[in-house]
Image (tube, rainbow, N blue to C red; front, side):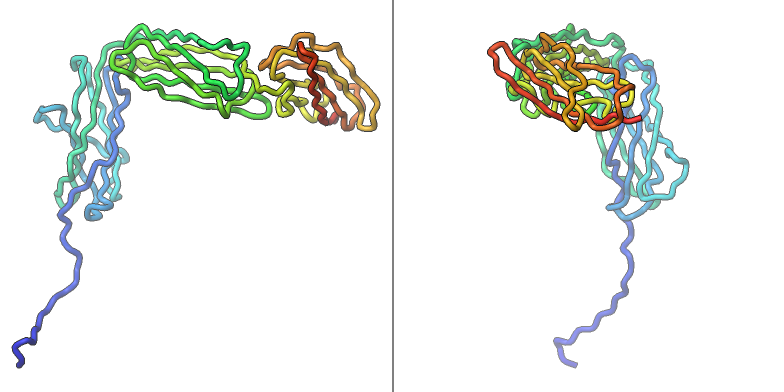
Length: 324
């Protein structure tokens, strides 16, 4: 037999499971506790990428304490490579402080996974922060694309602060939220918001701050946002459309205007010419209303005209229907 000839034997099979499951997410509610005496802790343990076993235990430790907190299976059945565990922790005797919680899980082969660390903030504070907000701009001349400058003041340091803007109309809705950077122990915040992409019309705002005890405080504000167009076509409409009883012709001018309205049948006969709105505010919605319950069924055309103080004019023409 040649000296360079080799023989070997082997058999295939699955290698033993030597890896433990990981705890990939933890939820603590509420956190901070905000005066609550009990918090609910949920931990998700998964062995999907660590041997494919079933996580049969999940425990956690608080700070350097050797005491083991054994979590309970949420659905009561070990039947998946991913299991959710839960625990109700009594914090009534805890001092106001931050606590490190370290979580580990074990599979059926008794392999322990790596630690996952989370933080529990215990606070007996139950009083929400008091927020005030000042709009630094001249809100009578605020246009889409401008920068809105706000000053938010709190009566105590905040953990988080967000400012949200919204507008809801019959035709559409708008929502935008900005998270504000929080310097340590600050109670005064300057917020600049670029109004690009905002719709014209009334914008409602709310500032929401969470203090270090987890309590939420809010304050609201609002402002008219001008479009730069004297009479934006997308802000002029009839509602309801079709109408059977009452109909409103709504419009939001881009600036202060006098507005007039004429309504015609589809073949050109004028059926309604109400008194004008002498002072329609820019960025604010105005409306002409009429009882159309006795109008003949059919299509109608409204012609809305706006005139500003310099005599500039803008006109919008649209169709609505009357039905029974």
